[in-house]
Image 1: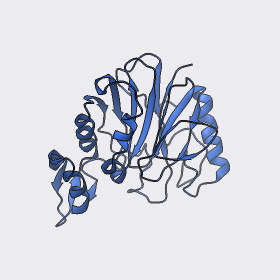
Image 2: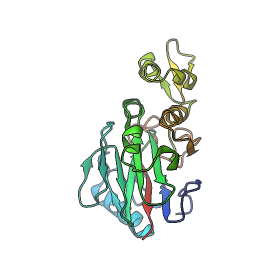
Image 3: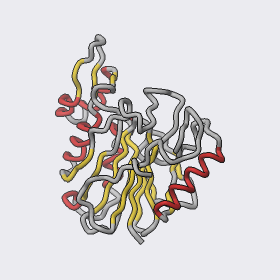
Image 4: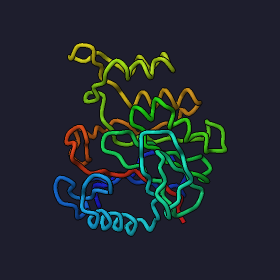
Length: 241
């Protein structure tokens, strides 16, 4: 799995993280090859094998979620698939997992290395407060929290309507800096990384890393905007056993 990504952030030694790519699985096109989403029309047997390979590679127990672009945050539990868009854990060996294919995955940990979390943030979840809801599951003050922004749709590819811009600017006026007019009249290009950084900073989280990998332009990743019939890659974070 040489092209899977290991986040570059100053997390404590006991905090481990990984972002899968399309490589290393058994799914056939258009889900080739390491699709980890069981809701996209792929062969269930292939998805199960892909998940088994991930679990075996790191000796972890991922807690999969049914993601709905909301703000619910649950304690990670590999024994059940909760309907939520973020999870946290303080139990070593259990991995918080955020599946995506253009939406923004955000990984969290505290500086003490005692708790981790993962959030799936499309623009709706981001505007509704999924990152803030995830931060609320940490017991430490904001300055003790680190965040890492995973691969997502980049600012040159994320064209949105004025209602998306208004949803963010109405809450945080400085969010205007994350939008520039598109060549299509009335549309804007949105920087989802900048929006996430602004919202985290508003909560006092300034130790934010990652960002800059565009799923639409990088063929290593699944991208719904590039191909609506596609798989999902996963960003995971866990505490070492």
